[in-house]
Amino acid sequence: MKKKILFVVCLLFGLMFINAGLNKFFNYMPTPKDMPANALAMFSAFMQIGWLLPLIGTAEIIGGILIIIPRFRALGAIILFPVMIGIMLSAVSLSSGLPMVLVLWAILIWVLVENKDKYLPLIRS
Image 1 (cartoon, rainbow, N blue to C red):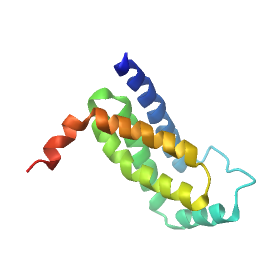
Image 2 (image 1 turned 90 degrees about the horizontal axis):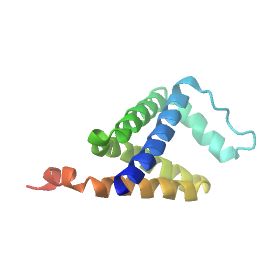
Image 3 (image 1 turned 90 degrees about the vertical axis):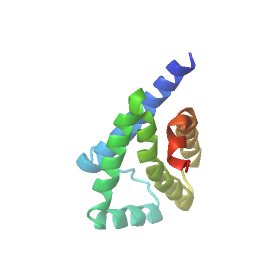
């Protein structure tokens, strides 16, 4: 039962990241009209760096696909970890969306803990 719940959670988590990554390339989700000025300034700064959004979008798409597939879930979690750090820093600096980010962190930490046996050889000497 636990594996089925983890699969469903990872499926939704992965699809969310795939959607966010594809949006960075195709820009199909409109930006909210009432977005604060500091958020607009931050996102316009990200857009001025030409390689940053495609890099983040690619990491989100690849990590989202890998976290859905149980065999590659550990690798997907490692790829999405720095993206989640960026999402957390953005939420903290903009003071918005923090509860959702904490839920996403809980899912990612659950995946990392469930795959800890795959990470142990990396830290053993």
